[in-house]
Image 1 (cartoon, chains in turn orange, purple):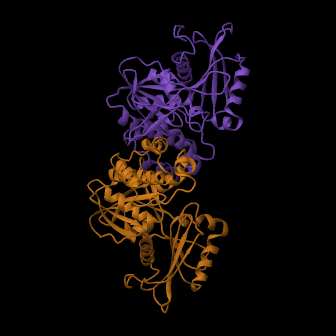
Image 2 (spheres, helix red, strand yellow; image 1 turned 135 degrees about the vertical axis):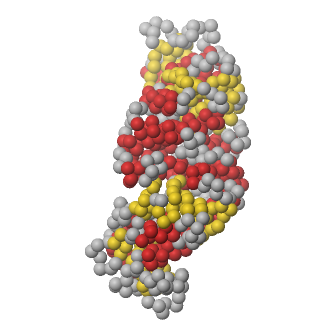
Image 3 (spheres, one colour; image 1 turned 180 degrees about the vertical axis):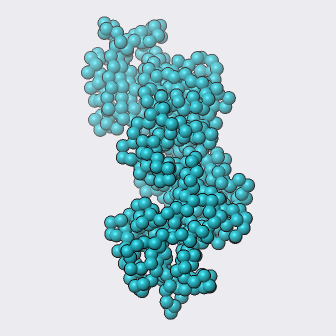
Length: 317
Length: 317
């Protein structure tokens, strides 16, 4: 970050369901300040989106008239306003351009649209990941298979700078819902241990799932049975479930979106990045990892440029 | 049922996690009385298994010394006593023979063992379904693929009267857990409607899942997206989820256990039987349906015979 001599030109927010991150950006795309909060969409619906936003901006010392660019679930039907969806196939640049303006605020506040895949047999939507994708630094040409893991993992097929199609695998949600509410809670225990990337159970269940074309449900109960018949421990059961779900996701996504792909661009951070790196390696695919935090920030800066909130002529961040 | 002139020779109980059913059986295998209760394993752990059993037997007018044969989760580690598992492959008749006796009771009370598949890469267990299987009236020879749907659906490959292998698909549990605790609760609403077997949504999602080899997770989020993009109604969303999970189960089970199978023996009752009949038909498989209630009762009577509690010479029920 700079020493703070430059004046901010725009505030950028990644505003999700349970968390938000905010940055002050100067006219050259440099980060001047950063904040993180737990006041995602759920909290903001109670406190008011404008109140939450102004609280963070004040804490960062943002000027009154500073414009704001936002991505994520704040733009959903349950959010501040419903920003439109851009229908795919669509060029990545064009997605960012159509940010929706929030009326009645003293600032210029805009929310990046999401993506919609309006196929009768494969409807899908994303919000927030389109901005990560735009900031992932993909080459302008060629075909790329992009994986953005999380509660609802997104896999995107990119062709010559355009989103050709995408899909959602609710891997993170399945892990938490099954470990808390299904019979597997007896296997994993009340507080499932973090899964170690070098766990042999993670690797073994992941490898097996990679060979099953995305069939995950046939092996869920085996985790319970392994506890009864093979004395599987609770921390290892969590590794089995994680390996099964991630391996199944990769096998399924590759089948649907990765015909001929030999490598994956992984947009992820932290422990999740480690698990997906290991799993993608086990799948025999090449890998380039982009930090998800950096990608969304770069995408928001690009969105500020595309919407004329900061100059295109500035230096790259 | 008979007019009650015959004396009961044995009481038979299907004692599951949340429910039990009890019958008084005469020496010829005829049913003299029947009761149903909500005092399954969970309730019985509080009230005492012996108390619950004696209450039902008294209400049916059973003599003090009447022997009792039990199947189901009452024989699990969380049950009355842990009845052993018979390891597969095993002849179906031999499974019933090894019922475990409960010590310290004034009656002769025995619990049918469960089945265990002790494969390193496909551990599995069942309790209760082995008795349904024994009572399903399978021919003594040949190969048969048996489907017993429910909270944890079981598929069994039977070869010449022996269980060759089996698997568990937690389809019923996935439906209830996902509809109550995942993002799909917004799609299905608080009280998911019963799924109509002639719903075009059930059929369409089932057919699609049948073609996906058991890959279910790639299409879960599409139910949510269809609500956002295609105005899918909540009752239709429940039909989509049901069709997806059942179709996925059949595709996966067929891949794992049904190599070459052209028909399925379905052991099921009520609305679930209707949905699986439709789905198995969509899969292009032949079908013979056995009522699950009748199968478990017939299996318990056979278990009473195999354990010498009633004579083998009696007429078939």
